[in-house]
Image (cartoon, rainbow, N blue to C red; front, side):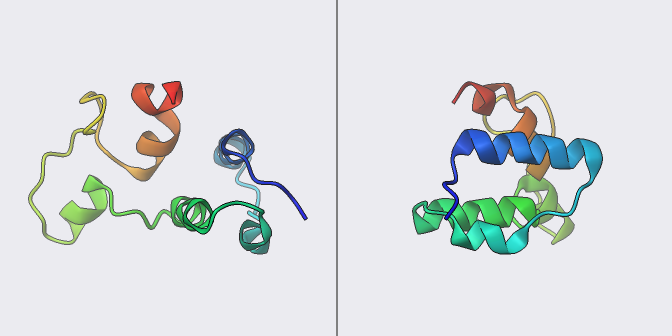
Length: 89
């Protein structure tokens, strides 16, 4: 059974973004991690988190800036991979 860590997930997401390899979806659910971590990983990979860009497309009127760094639009990729604040966590 694989052990999922934040670093492993981050590295895989970075590789996925660069090479567009298919994600091993079933492996996410087999990971030995708390359910909330596994669920968040699944939501991030499927780009299903309700970030500002998604909410705006659904008709909500929000500021599109990232609520952490206030530099770029809050989108799935920015919030979990590129935000200067989350990279420090």
